[in-house]
Length: 424
Image (cartoon, rainbow, N blue to C red):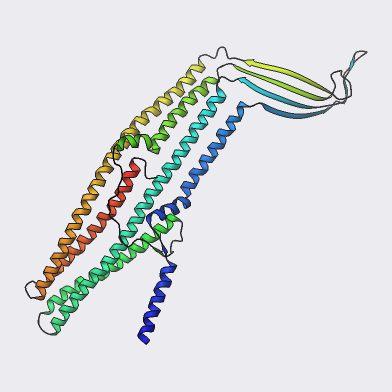
C-alpha cells in the first residue's frame, strides 16, 4: 500500500511539474520572438513614422488656409490737414487661401521620395523579421540538440554503470583482475562529468531561448524531445532568380535608387518656375474708406517666380544627385553578386546536411552493432575491457555526430529559405 501511495505521489508531482512547464515548438517560438523583439517593434514604428511623413507631404497638393490677427496702437496719429488723419487703434482679422498652381514638380517629387522611403522601411521590417526568425531557429534547434545530448549522456552513463557493475561482480568473485575495474571507473567518472556538462548546456540554451522569445530567463520550458529529420517538400527551382526578386536587401537597394532619382527631380524643381494663386479676406480698422468703423475687404493675388542666372548652380546640384544615384546602382550590382553566391553556397550546405544525416545515421547503427558484439565477446572472455570501452566511446561519438547532423540540417534549411527571401 505504501509503495502504491509513493507511485501515485511521484506521478502527481511529475504532472504538476510538466503542467508548470510550457511546451514550445519552433513555430511558436518564432511567433513569440516576432511579437516581443524590440528591433522588430522599432522597425514597425519607423515605418509608421515615414508613412505619416509621406501622408503629410501629400497634403501639399491641397490649398492652404491661414489666419492671423493684428493690433496696433499709434500714440500720435499722422495728420494731413484737411486731407487725412490716421487712427490711434488699428486692428484687423485676415484669412488667406493659397494654392500652388505649378511648383516645378516639387510636390510630386517629394511625395514620391517619401513613398520610396516608406517601401524601404517596409522591406527593412521584412529583413529584421527574417533575421530574427533565423536566429530563433538556430537557438531553438540548438536547445533541442542539447536536450538530446543530455538524454544521450545519461544513457551513456547508464551503459558504463551497468558494465561497471558486471566487472565489479567479477572482481569480487575473483574471476578477473582489478585492473579492468579501475579502467572502467575512470570512464565512469568521465561519463558523470559529461552528464553534468550536458545538463548545464541545456539550461543555458533554454535561458537563451527564453530571452529571445520574451520569457523570464529562468522560466521552465519544454522543447521537442528530438530533432525531426523528415525531408521538407519545397520547390527549390530557380533559387537565384527568386532571390533577386524577393530578398529584402535587394528590394531596399532598388528603392534606394528610386529615392535618389526622385531626389534628382526634387533638386531640379528648386530651379524651375513657381506659380501660386491666393485669395485674402480682411476685416478691421482702418476700413477701406479709412474710417474708424471696422469693415470688410478682400483681395486676389498671384505670384510667379523663375530663377534666371545662378552661375550654373542648378546643373551642379542636379549632377551631384545623379552621381549619388549611379553610386547606388554600383552597390546594387555588388549586392546581386553577394546574394547569388549566398544562395548557391546555402544550397550546397543544405544538400550536404542531408547526406550528413544519412551517413551519421548509418555510422550510428554500425557503432551500436559493434558495441553489442564487443560487449558479448567481453562477457565470453574473448575481448579485453578496453575494446568494450572504446566501442562505447565510438558509439557515443557516433550518436553525438548524428544529433549534430540533424541540427545542421534544420539550420541549413532555414538558412536556405532566408537566402532566397522566403523564410519570413
